[in-house]
Length: 256
Image (cartoon, rainbow, N blue to C red):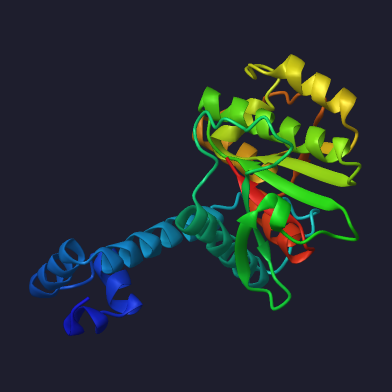
């Protein structure tokens, strides 16, 4: 990285991303981004963080009888959750499409967690800290790609099956938002029978659909009626809030 590139702050990159610079300044930063991989990576991360924060603030209107956190508190929680998701996507990547697991008893699945100083860390799920000798895992699905939906269930079953064989206590939550809601919708889920079977065999598994995502879907598609969820699915007010809460409680986070 050149000395000029080192002087490009995140503030300047944000202004560049938001199209708030004059033509000369935009040209200078664009040339630097094209010639420097590290700077290009910083710009991409800032852009993705901004998009995640914008998504987090797309909260539906709430009826008065439902108590909610203050706007400032909710914004802080959402921004932190968005930063957590950015860390996962930018640092360790997602579970790969059609991932193949080894025939051994090893779990080569990457996860994120908060360490004792509340800093984000990444590791194989087997190497992440335990809670009282057991595993607490939140698996997140946000795409309607059928292969990814199947990958989420494959990963869920693999984790539960392996830890049960090791006699390690485990609790796993699968949280779906955005396109991932298709996994838990009774009207269109391609895996209803498998979800029923998994829930029957593993009482330590819980499925959650994001209520915020459901409300956004209703507004976007001009629906008047909430699509039915599978009987195994519960709802959580907001997926990002749940991810952050679980991370703070010591859970590990895996995204498909």
